[in-house]
Image (cartoon, rainbow, N blue to C red; front, side):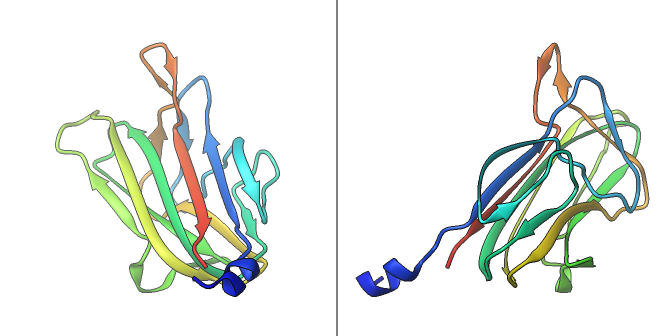
Length: 152
């Protein structure tokens, strides 16, 4: 990257998470409401909220992690950009439990283009209600997290 291009590059990134003291239910069609955040740069987020506002246009790497428990046999999540599921199934990930009551970690990632001043949500796009776990043993853990990093 030339010095000239480097000077024009302006980073944008953000990290939000969901913590709690008891299991958190996420209904089908419902977006995750995050209640904590780490560093935010050119990404707006008001606690608690299910929406991030991305103020800069660019290609972004997005990663999400969910700790899912319960009797549901499968879970499916996807990213909602400007009120629409990201096209071509680029951000849809799911898990299927082979043992009833198993706790599994669902991890999704993608690189997508985001226009400036866009809204971004992480939504349960599956048919069932999921239970997110914010406690393992007696330790508090992140039940869900979403990381957004501008690449260019």
